[in-house]
Image 1: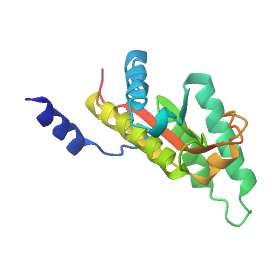
Image 2 (image 1 turned 90 degrees about the horizontal axis):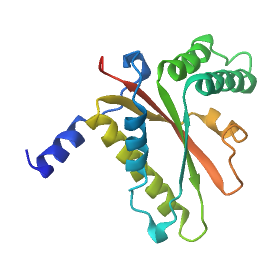
Image 3 (image 1 turned 180 degrees about the horizontal axis):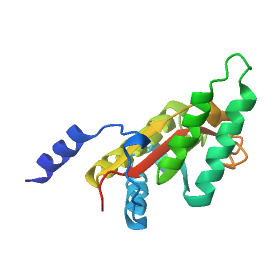
Length: 172
């Protein structure tokens, strides 16, 4: 297969795959590094590199799950609180091998939409690299992420656009 055929195949296979379908096997650090490196190759006007990624694994990921569950509980009125949603928040984060926060840094050098587009292209590169490595992934942007400013050390000119969940699909 030539490069164009390989790329077409990867693009056609790209899907959002959710944590319930992830295996228990870890994604190697080498593959995680490659996924994040591919994100940094996205085009960005004036080379602002507006993406800021933070990887959550192990204990740090477990703390993120607990924090997000606590935020959900604290921000819901008693009549709108759903125990299933509360449990799902913890399950998704804990089932994923790695969770990456997607934070945008607005430089002020270019229109905000251009930096949002650059971050979106970075995430698409992550999706494609995950697909090439048989790593399941999806981008989720629940309103809860707006309350993670301290854990993500989000600055005034930054905003969290969501979380990128990743998990191995194979027994490798």
